[in-house]
View 1 (cartoon, rainbow, N blue to C red):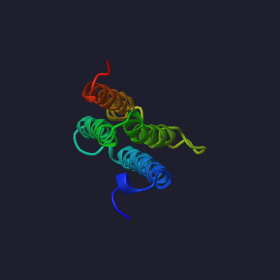
View 2 (view 1 turned 30 degrees about the vertical axis):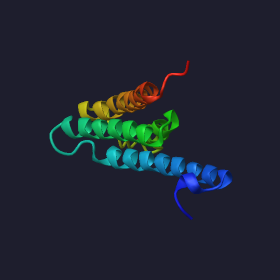
View 3 (view 1 turned 90 degrees about the vertical axis):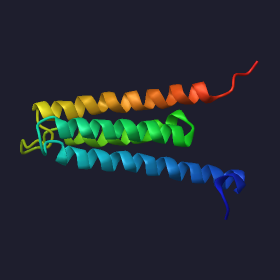
Length: 132
């Protein structure tokens, strides 16, 4: 089978799609885990820790995939999972509460995901050689 560069163009495209789907699922998993664990430990510290993790994930995935979409895929997965779980259910229960830790997790995480995607984009743009 070989490395991705040795694969025919059609198989390489399929491989790339699968990798982006895996990154999306990675973001979803981080969002689900964070949504249930953000309030552990000292008030907003764990929530801020989850924010740092999603920032790092988006940054490293964007750099690793050498594309804007590489950082965007886990960010979208995280945002979908976290914001869906923050909505109240029919019986009124809420997973992400309107506490300090909940707000740090939800809004800080959205900002961190956006910053991670943007940083990956900027770093990638600076790394490309200039065309004349």
